[in-house]
Image (cartoon, rainbow, N blue to C red; front, side, top):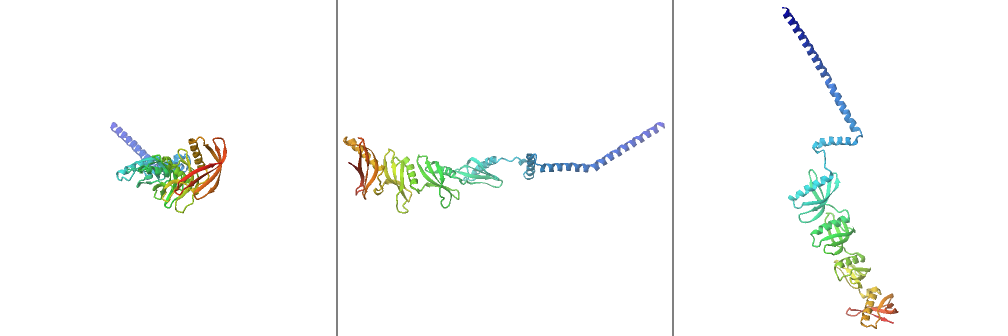
Length: 378
């Protein structure tokens, strides 16, 4: 009986102890339940205060900027697009995508080189495009999310336009290799840019050209129409580089009056490859044909071209007759008389005998148009 009573007492104590533990656990859980929301609100408040401090702070600026960027990128594009390509990388990628389009349309470029960034927002690029038909041109191109395309790139300077016409000439019969001294000229109706320059061709020829780019960015060239005697002289000298019988140097240029609309005519002292000089008329007619011819007698003067011819004649005479004197120089020139068919001049002649004499010399033209020269020594 005593053992049973003791066992009952111990059981009662264990039951009381269990009840105490259960009460304490319930009290602890109740405390946690009461504190959970205040603690959560406190933590959230601290986080919000920290973010406000960071966003309103100027330091560190790079960190703030990066954080702001991440918010925008994550909310709009997603984290995978946070690292954006540079404009240069975008242009390279765009060029590759542009070239792929040639498989669908052979009017698209098959290659783009010399790629540059010309705009960054949005990214727009320029480059030299090579096409299947063999043409080459400078283009502006872009590749955006909903649109990809290209168009000719307008020339900004005369040097730009010169490079364009060189590339265009690759499909022309006469290959242009260089344009030197490009400079603006008066813009013709319908053109956005007009320039002039010296064109050098693969065959060695040269000429002064005018270059034009219209509102559609199409280009064309032609030989420059001469407006002054200097323009005409420069043009003729350049053309003469590849023509053995043409003059290579022109001096003392002055206009010859003529009917309006007949082009341009000038008189000039010309020098040939062999050193010979002559007085000539150079011209460019209404059809832009260029040439030169003997200067009309009415336009001749008592100048070095005539004295040069007289000195050469005296030298030829002396070579055939030893009694004849050579004339070394004629100076102090003056005009003595002029008729429709004859010009008579005077001057002081220096002979190879060291003698100096006044002489008269002339040039005349007969009824057939043939010309003769001569001189009379005292």
